[in-house]
Image (cartoon, rainbow, N blue to C red; front, side):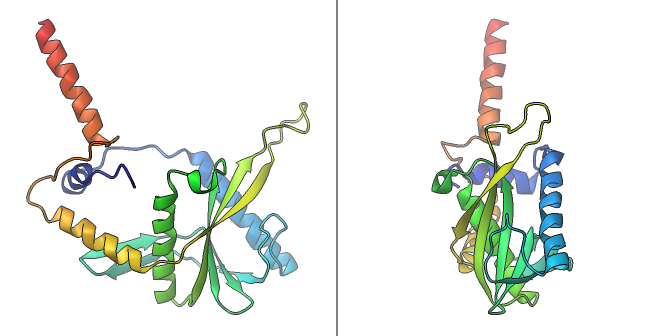
Length: 213
């Protein structure tokens, strides 16, 4: 990410990561989405219309939580939203995103690309090979309601293909290990919006308070 801060990364790994809150509604939406896709394959032997995935033969029903030791003393873990087996017996990994579709303008895209490529790397080791396609599937809420009496929000779907670059994962893991091997935190990214930014504001506040006294 452009604002990645090695200083914050070092602090998070050596001390602790600040608490965060992930809204539960997104987990609920993901669960509903997966249930719809799986039900369509089970009942109709085809993907649902909203999935728009020509050539999909089946969806992987088994638990796909991956945990895999890799180089540079790391353990990769991950749980793909869905893995589809295609007509040519290759696999297509899809990650569902409930968000406004902005194409390549999405500032989180580099993170999503790494996420999907890490899934691909692990999936092939777990026997889901070859992985030929990776995609983000955005669910964007429609801006207009069809019925003002009954609040029913509908979504449009948009695919965004992700380049297959699993070797990129190993390069990043090596870089991460080099950062953490430093005896003290490295220099911060001047564009940091994380811990560094918060600490700087805290110091300014503390100095300001002392000057008032």
